[in-house]
Image (cartoon, rainbow, N blue to C red; front, top):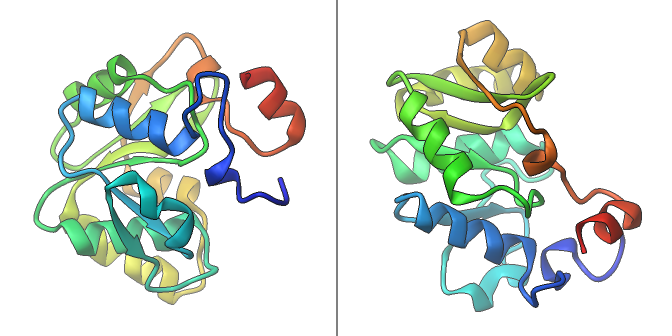
Length: 169
């Protein structure tokens, strides 16, 4: 998306995507809510703990590893920071379906960055990264997850392009 950092872009209601997601996570009963990022500065004004990636630049799986390590022994509700339409009810559905190991949102396909992950899976996540595997989808598929079906994929719309942002506004 270029500049400014997409975490700082204000949406139609005046909040950033991260602020909307933090509110949804709190509304679903998730606590603490933390942000995992390569750069902390875009998030400092949110009043949330920011955990730095332990393996910067390796993508979302490295962020999941950092979250699992930071929050152990608690399970982690993983949500990509650029899905501003995801609501508390969506997150509650995911939490209720969690089997104590791994639950992942599904629409017409897996939504790997919307999941509840047991902290004891950090070894599997770390091992995948050590092998040079960065794909969350493949790892969740290999580990076997509880699929949580969502009929509407709108909640999982992410902000990757200016066109996505315009649709979200």
